[in-house]
Length: 238
Image (cartoon, rainbow, N blue to C red; front, side, top):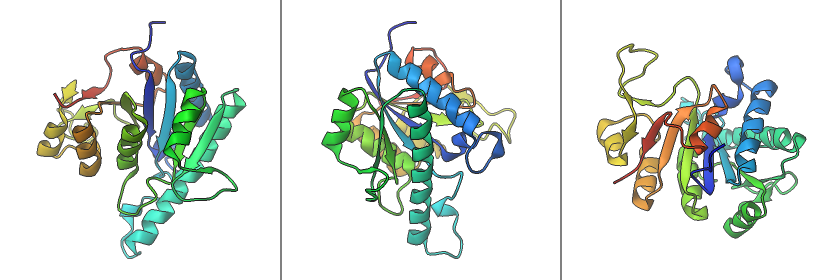
Protein backbone atom coordinates (compact mmCIF):
# COMPACT_ATOMS: atom_id res chain seq x y z
CA UNK A 1 0.00 0.00 0.00
CA UNK A 2 1.25 3.48 -0.83
CA UNK A 3 2.55 5.82 1.83
CA UNK A 4 -0.26 7.78 3.51
CA UNK A 5 -0.71 11.40 2.52
CA UNK A 6 -1.28 12.60 6.08
CA UNK A 7 0.41 12.20 9.45
CA UNK A 8 -2.42 13.28 11.76
CA UNK A 9 -6.12 13.33 10.91
CA UNK A 10 -9.52 14.10 12.36
CA UNK A 11 -12.12 11.59 11.20
CA UNK A 12 -15.61 13.07 11.55
CA UNK A 13 -18.35 10.45 11.59
CA UNK A 14 -22.04 11.24 11.64
CA UNK A 15 -24.07 9.40 14.24
CA UNK A 16 -26.14 7.93 11.41
CA UNK A 17 -22.99 6.29 10.05
CA UNK A 18 -22.99 4.02 13.11
CA UNK A 19 -26.63 3.01 12.72
CA UNK A 20 -26.11 1.05 9.50
CA UNK A 21 -29.31 0.18 7.68
CA UNK A 22 -31.32 0.63 10.87
CA UNK A 23 -31.30 4.41 10.54
CA UNK A 24 -31.45 4.76 14.32
CA UNK A 25 -29.41 3.58 17.28
CA UNK A 26 -26.34 1.41 16.83
CA UNK A 27 -25.54 -1.40 14.42
CA UNK A 28 -22.69 -3.49 15.81
CA UNK A 29 -21.72 -4.95 12.44
CA UNK A 30 -21.36 -1.48 10.93
CA UNK A 31 -19.38 -0.19 13.91
CA UNK A 32 -17.04 -3.18 13.72
CA UNK A 33 -16.41 -2.55 10.02
CA UNK A 34 -15.59 1.10 10.65
CA UNK A 35 -13.32 0.17 13.57
CA UNK A 36 -11.46 -2.30 11.36
CA UNK A 37 -10.83 0.35 8.71
CA UNK A 38 -9.70 2.88 11.32
CA UNK A 39 -7.20 0.34 12.61
CA UNK A 40 -5.85 -0.11 9.08
CA UNK A 41 -5.31 3.64 8.86
CA UNK A 42 -3.46 3.65 12.16
CA UNK A 43 -1.36 0.67 11.03
CA UNK A 44 -0.15 2.88 8.17
CA UNK A 45 1.46 5.13 10.76
CA UNK A 46 -1.27 7.79 10.81
CA UNK A 47 -2.27 9.44 14.10
CA UNK A 48 -6.07 9.24 14.28
CA UNK A 49 -8.53 11.33 16.27
CA UNK A 50 -12.27 10.88 15.84
CA UNK A 51 -15.23 13.18 16.36
CA UNK A 52 -18.58 11.41 16.21
CA UNK A 53 -22.05 12.94 15.99
CA UNK A 54 -25.16 11.87 17.84
CA UNK A 55 -27.88 12.14 15.21
CA UNK A 56 -28.69 8.44 15.43
CA UNK A 57 -30.11 9.21 18.87
CA UNK A 58 -31.00 12.89 18.97
CA UNK A 59 -30.39 16.10 17.05
CA UNK A 60 -30.47 19.18 19.24
CA UNK A 61 -31.55 21.42 16.40
CA UNK A 62 -34.57 19.22 15.65
CA UNK A 63 -36.36 20.12 18.90
CA UNK A 64 -39.50 22.15 18.28
CA UNK A 65 -40.98 22.90 21.67
CA UNK A 66 -38.07 21.89 23.88
CA UNK A 67 -35.55 24.43 25.14
CA UNK A 68 -32.72 24.47 22.58
CA UNK A 69 -29.96 24.37 25.18
CA UNK A 70 -31.48 21.31 26.87
CA UNK A 71 -31.95 19.67 23.49
CA UNK A 72 -28.33 20.29 22.50
CA UNK A 73 -27.06 18.77 25.73
CA UNK A 74 -29.17 15.69 25.03
CA UNK A 75 -27.48 15.44 21.63
CA UNK A 76 -24.06 15.68 23.29
CA UNK A 77 -24.93 12.71 25.49
CA UNK A 78 -25.81 10.78 22.34
CA UNK A 79 -22.28 11.38 21.05
CA UNK A 80 -20.89 9.89 24.26
CA UNK A 81 -22.87 6.69 23.70
CA UNK A 82 -21.51 6.48 20.15
CA UNK A 83 -17.95 7.18 21.29
CA UNK A 84 -18.03 4.41 23.89
CA UNK A 85 -19.43 1.96 21.33
CA UNK A 86 -16.66 2.87 18.90
CA UNK A 87 -14.03 2.62 21.62
CA UNK A 88 -15.22 -0.86 22.55
CA UNK A 89 -15.11 -2.01 18.91
CA UNK A 90 -11.60 -0.63 18.46
CA UNK A 91 -10.25 -2.19 21.65
CA UNK A 92 -11.80 -5.55 20.75
CA UNK A 93 -9.42 -5.66 17.77
CA UNK A 94 -6.38 -4.65 19.82
CA UNK A 95 -6.30 -0.89 19.30
CA UNK A 96 -5.58 1.34 22.29
CA UNK A 97 -8.01 4.22 22.56
CA UNK A 98 -8.97 7.08 24.82
CA UNK A 99 -12.34 8.82 24.93
CA UNK A 100 -12.18 12.47 25.98
CA UNK A 101 -15.37 14.34 26.75
CA UNK A 102 -16.03 18.06 26.66
CA UNK A 103 -18.50 17.52 29.53
CA UNK A 104 -16.85 15.89 32.51
CA UNK A 105 -17.97 12.34 33.31
CA UNK A 106 -14.85 10.89 34.87
CA UNK A 107 -16.30 7.45 35.56
CA UNK A 108 -16.36 6.62 31.85
CA UNK A 109 -13.94 8.99 30.07
CA UNK A 110 -11.20 11.56 30.46
CA UNK A 111 -12.03 15.26 30.37
CA UNK A 112 -10.78 16.93 27.20
CA UNK A 113 -7.26 18.32 27.66
CA UNK A 114 -5.49 19.35 24.48
CA UNK A 115 -1.95 18.50 25.57
CA UNK A 116 -3.07 15.12 26.86
CA UNK A 117 -4.91 14.38 23.62
CA UNK A 118 -1.79 15.17 21.58
CA UNK A 119 0.33 12.98 23.85
CA UNK A 120 -2.08 10.07 23.40
CA UNK A 121 -1.79 10.44 19.63
CA UNK A 122 1.99 10.52 19.81
CA UNK A 123 1.90 7.30 21.82
CA UNK A 124 -0.12 5.55 19.13
CA UNK A 125 -3.54 5.74 20.75
CA UNK A 126 -6.72 6.65 18.90
CA UNK A 127 -8.46 9.56 20.60
CA UNK A 128 -12.24 9.90 20.38
CA UNK A 129 -13.63 13.34 21.17
CA UNK A 130 -17.12 13.09 22.68
CA UNK A 131 -19.83 15.52 23.86
CA UNK A 132 -19.15 17.95 21.04
CA UNK A 133 -17.51 21.18 22.16
CA UNK A 134 -19.44 21.07 25.43
CA UNK A 135 -21.43 24.11 24.36
CA UNK A 136 -25.01 24.32 23.05
CA UNK A 137 -25.63 25.86 19.62
CA UNK A 138 -22.41 24.37 18.23
CA UNK A 139 -22.48 21.31 15.99
CA UNK A 140 -20.12 18.35 15.97
CA UNK A 141 -18.88 19.62 12.59
CA UNK A 142 -17.71 22.74 14.41
CA UNK A 143 -16.18 20.49 17.06
CA UNK A 144 -14.22 18.64 14.36
CA UNK A 145 -12.91 21.94 12.99
CA UNK A 146 -12.03 23.20 16.47
CA UNK A 147 -10.24 20.02 17.53
CA UNK A 148 -8.41 19.85 14.20
CA UNK A 149 -7.06 23.36 14.81
CA UNK A 150 -6.15 22.57 18.41
CA UNK A 151 -4.24 19.35 17.73
CA UNK A 152 -2.83 20.65 14.41
CA UNK A 153 -4.37 17.92 12.28
CA UNK A 154 -3.38 17.78 8.61
CA UNK A 155 -6.91 17.20 7.35
CA UNK A 156 -10.50 16.55 8.38
CA UNK A 157 -12.12 13.50 6.81
CA UNK A 158 -15.90 13.93 6.73
CA UNK A 159 -17.51 10.51 6.36
CA UNK A 160 -21.08 10.97 5.14
CA UNK A 161 -23.83 8.38 4.98
CA UNK A 162 -25.83 8.11 1.75
CA UNK A 163 -23.70 10.51 -0.30
CA UNK A 164 -20.23 10.25 -1.84
CA UNK A 165 -19.20 13.90 -1.94
CA UNK A 166 -20.51 17.45 -2.21
CA UNK A 167 -23.20 18.22 -4.78
CA UNK A 168 -24.83 21.45 -5.91
CA UNK A 169 -28.17 20.00 -4.77
CA UNK A 170 -29.38 16.88 -2.98
CA UNK A 171 -28.56 13.94 -5.31
CA UNK A 172 -31.26 11.88 -3.60
CA UNK A 173 -33.87 14.37 -4.79
CA UNK A 174 -32.28 15.64 -8.00
CA UNK A 175 -30.92 13.08 -10.45
CA UNK A 176 -29.12 15.89 -12.31
CA UNK A 177 -27.23 17.10 -9.26
CA UNK A 178 -23.61 17.99 -10.04
CA UNK A 179 -20.82 16.58 -7.90
CA UNK A 180 -17.81 18.76 -7.10
CA UNK A 181 -14.33 17.25 -7.13
CA UNK A 182 -12.80 20.34 -5.52
CA UNK A 183 -14.22 23.33 -3.68
CA UNK A 184 -13.11 26.33 -1.69
CA UNK A 185 -14.64 27.09 1.70
CA UNK A 186 -15.78 30.47 0.45
CA UNK A 187 -17.71 28.67 -2.32
CA UNK A 188 -19.52 26.60 0.30
CA UNK A 189 -20.55 29.76 2.12
CA UNK A 190 -21.53 31.67 -1.02
CA UNK A 191 -23.51 28.78 -2.51
CA UNK A 192 -25.11 27.73 0.76
CA UNK A 193 -24.03 24.12 0.34
CA UNK A 194 -25.00 21.84 3.21
CA UNK A 195 -21.59 20.29 3.72
CA UNK A 196 -21.06 21.61 7.23
CA UNK A 197 -22.50 24.54 9.12
CA UNK A 198 -21.16 28.04 8.49
CA UNK A 199 -19.29 28.18 11.81
CA UNK A 200 -17.32 25.03 11.00
CA UNK A 201 -16.72 26.22 7.43
CA UNK A 202 -15.39 29.58 8.58
CA UNK A 203 -13.18 27.97 11.22
CA UNK A 204 -11.59 25.66 8.64
CA UNK A 205 -11.18 28.53 6.19
CA UNK A 206 -9.58 30.87 8.73
CA UNK A 207 -7.14 28.22 9.94
CA UNK A 208 -6.26 26.70 6.57
CA UNK A 209 -7.53 23.21 7.43
CA UNK A 210 -8.38 21.10 4.36
CA UNK A 211 -11.31 18.69 4.37
CA UNK A 212 -12.34 15.70 2.30
CA UNK A 213 -16.01 14.74 2.09
CA UNK A 214 -16.59 11.11 1.11
CA UNK A 215 -19.11 8.30 1.46
CA UNK A 216 -18.88 6.16 4.59
CA UNK A 217 -21.37 3.53 3.40
CA UNK A 218 -18.26 1.66 2.26
CA UNK A 219 -15.92 1.98 5.29
CA UNK A 220 -13.00 0.98 3.04
CA UNK A 221 -13.13 4.51 1.67
CA UNK A 222 -11.33 5.73 4.79
CA UNK A 223 -8.15 3.91 3.78
CA UNK A 224 -8.61 4.93 0.13
CA UNK A 225 -8.78 8.60 1.05
CA UNK A 226 -5.71 8.35 3.28
CA UNK A 227 -3.82 6.60 0.48
CA UNK A 228 -4.53 9.45 -1.95
CA UNK A 229 -7.29 7.99 -4.10
CA UNK A 230 -9.39 10.73 -5.71
CA UNK A 231 -12.75 9.99 -4.19
CA UNK A 232 -15.22 12.40 -2.66
CA UNK A 233 -14.74 16.17 -2.67
CA UNK A 234 -11.56 17.94 -1.61
CA UNK A 235 -12.11 21.29 0.11
CA UNK A 236 -9.35 23.82 0.65
CA UNK A 237 -9.04 27.59 0.63
CA UNK A 238 -6.46 28.61 -1.96
